[in-house]
Image 1 (cartoon, rainbow, N blue to C red):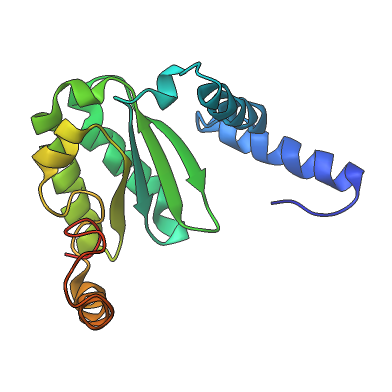
Image 2 (spheres, rainbow, N blue to C red):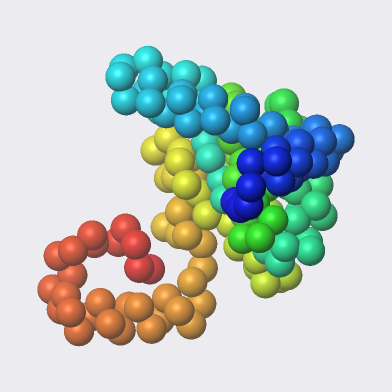
Length: 176
């Protein structure tokens, strides 16, 4: 987010769009159109990036590593088709990837996302499957959405066992 007087805002936006364009990124106008596309979807007009077979993946890492992680993800996913659309959020250390057409091969995509998840985990990063068709989630297995939660998963499972001893709330969906 930007803050300040109108002239400062225009300058900040122009600077960021210039930097993003130099790296092949989206302009703020493109991102706004994606927001409009979400509204169109709610009105029954599903654009390509919001189709039920679309895949969206969120990668998290240290902000200083975003460029390297984006390159790593692009290289890992390159054999499956066109490069994924990437939106980088530097302050949050987050990359959101939209993969067009990659869900057509769920087993191959699941394997590549699994390798990418493992690589990120070794570097204290993470991969979350934000949106995917059922075939891909099933191909990725029990921890498809969140991956391995490690100690946090054990802690949350203990809390859930105390609050929901019969396991009736979201069985097998959130906490491993």
